[in-house]
Image 1 (cartoon, rainbow, N blue to C red):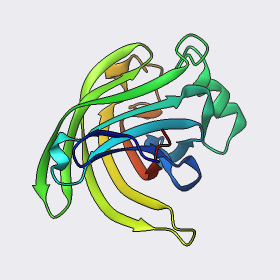
Image 2 (cartoon, rainbow, N blue to C red):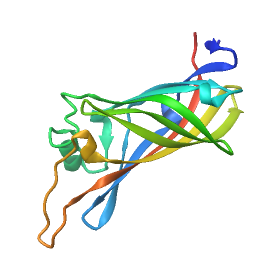
Image 3 (cartoon, helix red, strand yellow):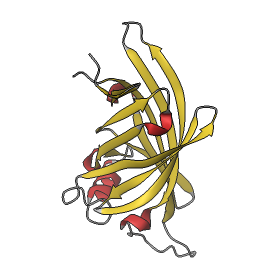
Amino acid sequence: MTTATSTNTTTYSIDKAHSEATFQVRHLLTKVRGRFSDFEGTIDYNESDPARSSVNVTIQAASIDTNERDRDNHLRSADFFDAEKFPTLTFRNQSITGKGDDRFDVAGDLTIRGVTRPVTLAVTFLGKAKDPWGNERIAFEADATINRKDFGLNWNAALETGGFLVGDEVKISLSAQAIPKAA
């Protein structure tokens, strides 16, 4: 049974097993990629008027994974996410603007380390389908680039050759499948 919040609006839960929250940031000369493995969210999707939809996502900061234990522990520390004091990252949309061809700008509030800033995600609706077991699914991809220092993620190390070890710009990528939420 699905939860309808208004005509043509269905509440979906993000299916973590078929979704991902990833990021990349410059480190010295290359880019380090990572992900958060523990997150949840809901999408109130209005099929006839997607601009009337909404999205809320919560990510557990301690679930950061860059495939390097020492770096992950440093990222969880007070130098970066301070996961013990600020256990979650959240995104709550404020508006959705259609851009044509199933593309949308989803503007909202991103909170990291207790700092909330406006962020706009470039979102693509990938469609709606039934899986092999007859369950309805919708899917989206989203991207944004943020400046980590806007959220108090200021740690860095100066390099002998000039410049800094960690870049300021962080590219965020989300890929989400969602299923109707049970009542």
